[in-house]
Length: 217
Image 1 (tube, rainbow, N blue to C red):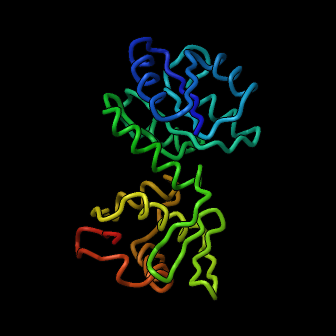
Image 2: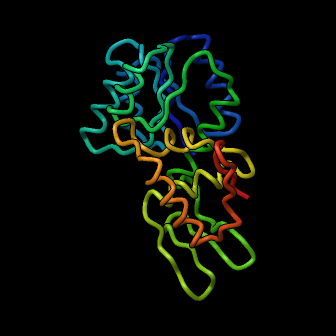
């Protein structure tokens, strides 16, 4: 997995870069101009952009990249603690957002989540049970004879469950990590997706804990 980190803080940038390079190929840019140079020279699996950097902000750079049909997944990091910048980040095309200060392990967990959501390095099929196999790139669940193609949101929900097995996931967490800020689903819509997934992979795979959320077994 290849990551481009844009962070102008010299100390924090070095700390994050040193940590990420233990697990991923990581390039580090100090500002938007340098980040654009890296992007012009190479392709990346994930962008990690700080908002406040010299030149264009991380949000502005992402907006520009999206206008040129660059669909690389993007995670925004920032010291801002308000919903306005959160909304701007999602509107610009970010899929995730993390506030400073954060633990490096949390950042890694979000990167691993991105790998699942966007099928990065997901060439191998996933065994759901003794009889069912899931093919992430094709959004297909097969029992060896029949194949069922999942709808996009069903795929994203299943990917998120697979990335967080046997952990209680609240409805709010599921919605915030899968739907865009301005397109949040109703409770009934989410339940409908969960019901359809259960019909495909088995009701015993997704446990409802009433009033708390879901757990993927």
